[in-house]
Length: 366
Image 1: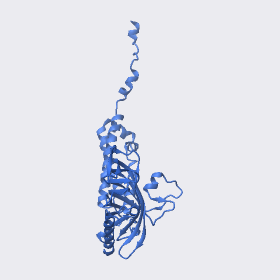
Image 2: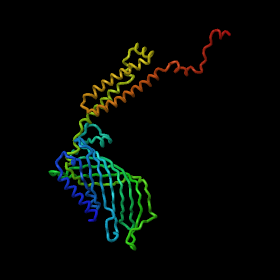
Image 3: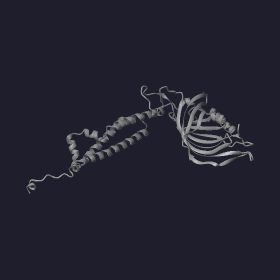
């Protein structure tokens, strides 16, 4: 195999040995995964990658990774008739999730829910699905005919697929990664030909395309990869954070509570005498509404936020959110009160515009 192939092959072998000698679960190394795409090895493109869990929490589902592919200008005594050179480096973010049964089996699942909830009618829980994004830089040169093409590109796009456990050993595991990356590219390229006189390649200056946006999505990676981990994907990305579920419930409860806190509901509790007093004294009207609002906010916090088992961080976040909603309600109250307190005679004035006033008796006699 080419010179670069055995070097990256040796690197993969070293990573495999390191994985086999790490301690058991619970160590920092458990957050790593080392991987290589077998499909690209078949195409004589050596590649290696690493992936790292963003958190040591057992509820973590997010990772970042870096992949390197290198098969560039390998040594040949004579210029070969065919060229297949590739260099690619890509950082990548992934979010893993597991499929689960539908929360409402009889209901219809929307297109958005299909991709965001992970709920399926026939869930495949042994798979760890992922979706994410990547950016990459690539240089390439291809020649399979008398005229070849070489260039470089920058790209960004989405990655998706799933992983399944393949082999589990005492101190490491091998998982199978099947996936696809597709995105948009900004690329430049030019054509070149082979010159038998100097046994070299010559650029075709009349076929030079500067950097431009490619107006259609381009598949940039097809994965049939092997991931080497201290802990198999079989035991990762499974548990749901219970506090996240609690936060979702609290958020829904707070939203429902605030739906009934407004000026109209406050006015509905007033007697006719109170309405007359508030009409005569708008300042007292606002003061009493603020007292009513403070009491309602206190009840929302005590009934829906405090005592729900949330961490201090999430409680503070809900308190800030409720404070912003309170300010918005006060702002809406001020604008509504200002509108409703407009003098009725001024509002009716335009209707009387242009009408003549009736003549008095003396004016008629004259």
